[in-house]
Image 1 (tube, rainbow over the protein chains, first blue to last red):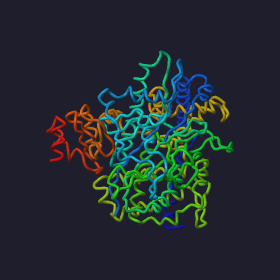
Image 2: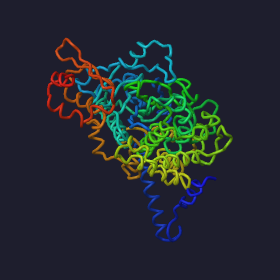
Image 3: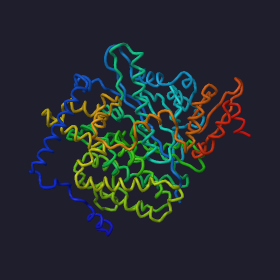
Image 4: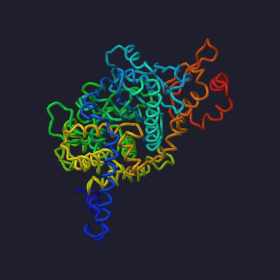
Length: 66
Length: 501
């Protein structure tokens, strides 16, 4: 292993962890909020997704180009 | 020593029409481009004099009828006031950015292209039957084995032998997918059915290492040799293997890292042999299909490395090179190399720790996380057509329907350029390349222009004689060079006389 590579491995940050551990009330609250945000986003996505996904995907064919 | 860089992208957009009426993709592509351009811009033709997509960088010309190639490309064509070209390439609307001098500007005009397509959709709806809807996707495949390209262009010193350029770029293109892949559900390669999601849109279509083709037996390194500039001094590296990026950080890195690497290649400081892959085509697919980023690929010297290992080595070499100051003349006082290096290092570090932390920066991560969340919440299998639809609709340029755009609106994506800047870039050219002269001439003298191209403008000054103004120097025709001249000559005759005087 090269010297530069070794230095780099030292630089690598560990994966971010929540201060105070994942079970603190704050962390739980934050987790719930993130999930609610995601649920809302997924509902919004459902509202704009093309209807009849199977048919739409089947009809999307591109020929030619480059 | 390396030369100053020019950056640009060309994007072919996927199109379809839903609802009543039977509108072919060719027709809708023509409508999108035609409806966008004002009448004055529509009559300025593309000048093909210096174009030859069949000239090969390895020094020969493919045997094919050149006139036929020109006719195919001449369907509908606009040169815009921002210096871009917007036209129909076969069945796709294609947007080529104006020439830019740094990766951030390239991203800005690339984004302006998306906004121009979105605006074209609105105008096209006005002339389609009620209920018909145009869909435009900035992606690279229809999910059924048909692919369309997002090409990058870089100005390179003609003195670099093409073989060395190709050999140096292959391992770089294979491994950069870890940050610039746009992500794709499934695989379109015949016989491959165990891929649920992969990093790149284009990996399935790479079949050769080096070649002239862009539609059949696609090569990782393309040899098309059309410099659109002084051919004695310049080469335009035409990169066809990349994905269409929506994330600005991914796009910035794709363009910026290639720009840096090209400077090292020009300066002969990259040790090509230590990076050469045993099989670039096979490795391209291995890297794309390995979401763990841990699988190794084999080098010609027998070493086994991960894509990230090679990217770290490229990054270290680039960092060492920038410290020598040998690039400073080519870069002038711009800080783009340092900005690219800093983002590159951040992204590689995060990819090694936990790729999910990059959902704000990288398309494949943003898309994968969205698909995973949707799949979990709705209890779907990977082959569910709703997941394929989410994959496709991620790339929809419509501000309301595009899922990437939804993520942006929800504050989930990091942006590098502001909406106001994008709006300006739809109209205005970069000020520091010949695109300035082209764009300003289109804005001011369109009615006296008969044709335009990357390296020339052709004026019709009196209805009898045509005057060709060559622009073979990409760095001439900037605001610093010609703004005063343009302001002094509201009439094109005066301008052309002054230019020739």
